[in-house]
Length: 65
Image (cartoon, rainbow, N blue to C red):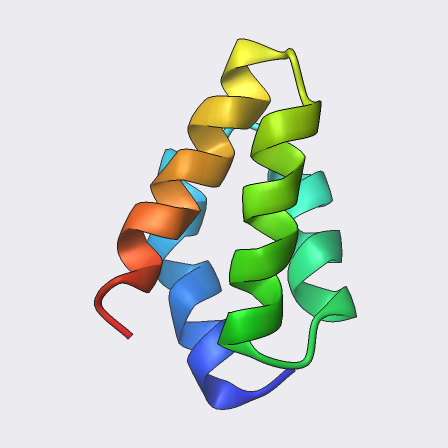
């Protein structure tokens, strides 16, 4: 995991409900852009409100990177 991804993960983890799933996702991606694409796609597919909230938290924080 690159440093930017690691820093973002550290910033969002306190606000995330599905910690293990988010960690796994961060470990699978290679860049912030790839993460953004995956999260945007997941937002459209997922119906679970807590997961959607997790994804939105991460996407909102991505704006600062």
